[in-house]
Length: 419
Image (cartoon, rainbow, N blue to C red; front, side, top):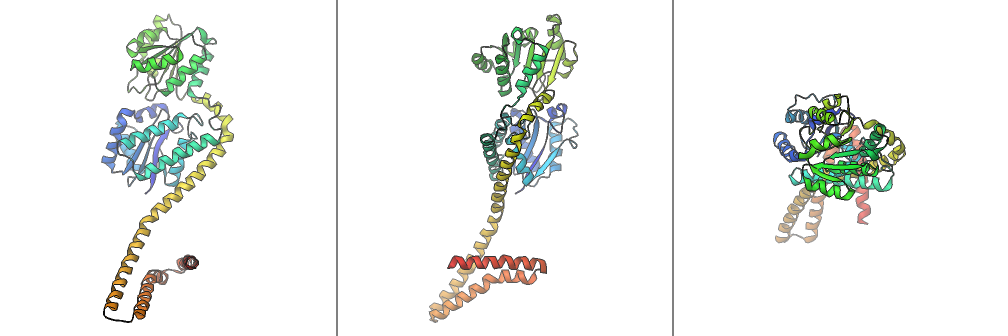
């Protein structure tokens, strides 16, 4: 069964397009079911992060059908053709392994993508959208990523988006110890950002989240304050630094809300970082004179500076992945011939039973047992070599030479095994 990947990422599509095809976890299960029902794919996993949306599937659906489904599903009058990439069979397997290992990330070697891939696989598995093929593929990808992590320095000194946000904030505020930072969300990205800003020594750190208990749990670990989103407007006016990353389908901070906060601050500037896809902060907020707004793509340049120091580990990681891909493809090739071998066994057993029944009838009527055995062995031999002989007689010269070499090796091996 063929493996396929269709998607777009930070290399092929701008943020404005990526956010239009993003899936949050609440919509993911429904999308998986719709995809299977509408296109009839047998197995499918959808990976959606701030930097990529990818569909992994096995079955008869074509990449063109998947592309059209993606456009129709989001209903945004999208034109994805120039931004999409497609990988099939071995390249699809290699891509999955590279993504899991962090080799295809904006932050080279970053560990978050492995967790995101595991979450995507878990959701698909729970909705019954995976099967033997994708189960094997993703388990092999997770194993390859683990080996890359343990045997290379690909993740060493990684410049994360969170640390890049701190670096940008320092360019604006030389002394962070006099600043208030507001973190919106309570997921892994905000957890990292909050810890980075706490480590940078901000004066006051506030965690805002829709679920107050989640904000409180993080705040308790880093000596921050926790609020729910109903208090966001007040805290926004007090914040010098805002970092947001939630799964909201609509912006949490509009241009008008940002303008109101600036007025209350008497036009003291606000540094904002929006790490969410779709975006949490309206892009128009960045048009305000006293708002300095950065997106996940804006942080990419800083991140790429740190990638250079890990390039030496890339070749080693790629070698590990190539070995794992080769092993996986060997398993796939072996799996593909299992039905053929099973059919050969069934046919041979049918011949055996027919000849055995014939021999038993001969013995029952009193024929000489030695003659019966001789007839049985000759008949079986003739019938078993009939197929190969017929194939040789019908093959052209090129294929005949290949068949002769193959059969010579087979019978040589069979003879040595018998001795």
